[in-house]
Amino acid sequence: MMYRWHTYIVHNNFGGYGLPKASSNGQEVNPFKYGGKELSSDLSLSYYDFEARMQLPALGIFQRPDPKAGEFPSINTYSYCAGDPINKIDRNGMEWNIIEDIINKKIHLQISGVLINSSTQNIDLEKFANTIKNQLEKVYTFSNEDISVSMDAYIRVVTNIKDVKYTDHVFNIVDVVNPQKKTAIASTKGLGGLGIKLGTDLVSEVLSGSNARTVAHEVGHSGGLKHTNNASDKDTNLMTQIKSLSSDVDKNDAIHLRTDQINELVNMYRSGKLNQNSPIKDKFNFQLQKDWPFVTLTHKILDL
View (cartoon, rainbow, N blue to C red):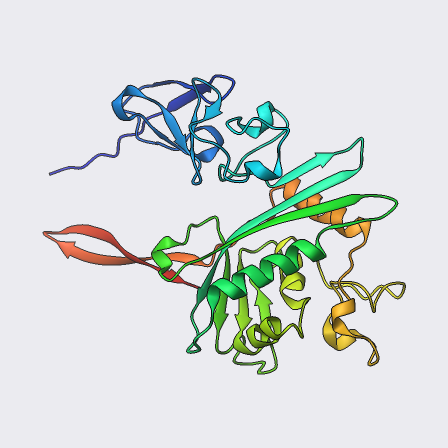
């Protein structure tokens, strides 16, 4: 018996808000279309799955109010990208990731992710998630003569890896961050990476209030920021390594960022270099059945 691969070429044309007009030379099988979101057509009603809520492309709106509507009273609670899909994107149905107001020199950052406990310690995950949310929003909200920056952080607690999406930032609590470097309390999976490991010692420090900068420092790496050793702000900059701070400096005072660092983060985002290297990997099971390879996805694994 001979098997042949069939190739289908699909051309997707979209209306203003993603309503598809698809044509192909065969059966269309790819459900991911406008904005990389999955299109469903139940009961002849087309809608996109934006995680937090569904978007109706025929109407250019979401099917229910924005869960963060209270923070944006001037925007219609059902609108998609504040009615401006040309200049803005919406990754999860709640907010877009970066909003730039160039005229008024304003940058709004948004990060979403999950918190999972892979350690042997019993930790109040909801309390910890809320604490690091508050830390991140405090550190990444500031103004100077050049720019005004703000942040919203959305961190949900998960207990099963199946509930983690491939696009999530993953804050993974572990007993040992780096077996080769016992003193490490946190690490990020490469610049722009989605995986952040947090040691149990760090968790204790954060919950006690003695460490208000390390999680924000690692998030800086996930935003593409490198370590800095600039003499002018070495003892106040968030991206200075703790070991490089002067001995008389309180590490919790070193939480500031320069304008050029925010610009670097934005440029990394624009160039598609952020949200990379998901720590979630698929584990497959390979079997041979009647001379035909049979592959099944058994489960997800956390590769950090």
